[in-house]
Length: 102
Image (cartoon, rainbow, N blue to C red; front, side):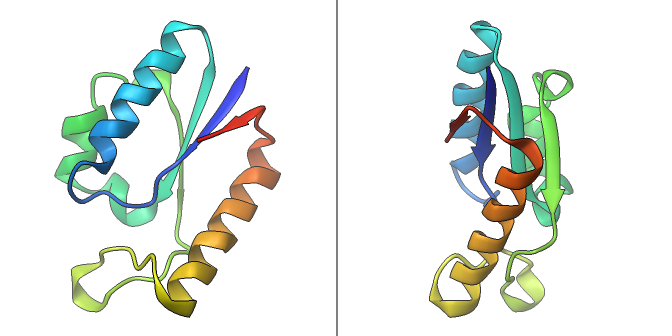
């Protein structure tokens, strides 16, 4: 079963939850695709939370998200944030064609 896990945010607890979800999905032989932001894959949080399962994930890093100035954090609210999320999710769904979406 092909599963898409969509998480553009990398700050805080988000990637820790991705780790727990992905680990469980991998244990039941799912093909796990993580779609995140290009900003996320370059962070220490990404490596520390997902490093031990990274070889088992198929990671797609998109650069379609709206960011907040110099902090490079992902904007998830307001018109530009919502549009960026929608565009990334639409791209991921068309590209990966998952059976399940988280």
